[in-house]
Picture (cartoon, helix red, strand yellow):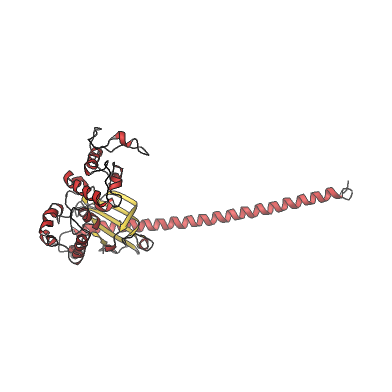
Length: 341
């Protein structure tokens, strides 16, 4: 049999062969494209991993240098390295380290004496703070009062399941979505506050990480290191007074509590006296981030910049020991107040 005898069959087979060849070419092109794409993806992944390793090394170097700066700050007077330590307020402004910092990195240190210590805050003082917030936020809900918030707060901390008059225990929290249980122990982080009945609503306009701390031994606030947000929680404190305090300390830190009292009237002094002290602490928050984060930050209506940073809470334990790391926040939401920019 010859193809000349069956011309139609011959043409059909030639068409089939052509289709097969074209299909092979198309599949080859697809495979080449996939391989090229995978190669580019692998190269990009390696580049990003390399960049991440370099950035992590810079962050860790900056954190360690900040810890060394704290040791220098508390070192005995007389050494050249500690000569300027009187100017180290650790109120969140950029710290000029004694040793070279990795390029484009920023270090800010906060003395936690500038935040309200929840570990030592008496109920009567907490009530005054809550009353001020309820008034400011115009919250008139019958289910939310300073007493109900404080009952829920104490129920969260105590070790039993007995519910105070206006408090909340396991039965209440198990009905939330998703359900959870109260800690029944001292706070381990400030974020826990938002879990307590009524607190997320009352503190909705407050950056709780900026005003509270679970570390420290004083129930008073240091006006030299206090954040503006923390100052504004103090009863009788106004926006104008808080701005005056920050303006004064930027020019020259308060050397005595009487000098600080000069900013207030006689009546105001009696009301704020229990709230302030120039005592510093050995607990600090260290903030580290690349400088470019500030340029790409989101700005709020108060002129503050919001972005993510690396944050560590540390405890200074003496000049012969590296400060102890208490808690790490690799991606901490941070608000850079306009007066620190």
